[in-house]
Length: 107
Length: 118
View 1 (cartoon, rainbow over the protein chains, first blue to last red):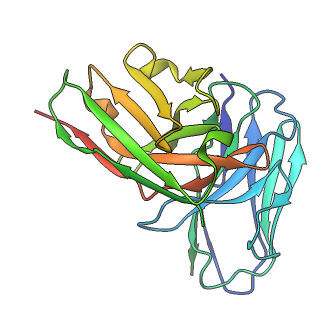
View 2 (view 1 turned 45 degrees about the vertical axis):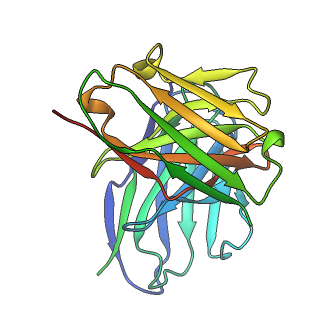
């Protein structure tokens, strides 16, 4: 099974900061990676598909990059509405697997 | 607007069965593969099962294989998850999801909570 390891597990940031979080796959998953945002008490929301494609309506401050085993989600200008848990997902092979999540909080 | 509405969750005893439903609207249901994703209380996301657009192919995580069955009724635009021999570790919120752009989990329902406890 492909293990997706996210880092850091949590981070504190300020409005206006540039935020970078990592997701590493235990084997090559190509660009079969998505990023999901889950705010407290809500269903997850997909932000990025195929590693770097932004979903419709997702602000352009969210950017996904990477291929193979190393992936990154960057928030260029942290906003007050962005605190959430962010998950990466690989769907290159079954079982599809999520990372453990990065919890992003405001200072 | 894509809408996915889950139902059928609740409290169930270990070893018993439960069937979840997901009513889909706002799109041509028969054109899309569908999936169930679950989230145990205070835990992360876990893929459970996927079914192809026509129901001909199904995939399961190992921990539910042989106990859970994903199915669909395209005439009713409804997705199902039959869960048998339930265990305490199956306690979770179960989400119905649909993909987009040939990539999964683009749309999510509000989830239905399944609690397995005596």
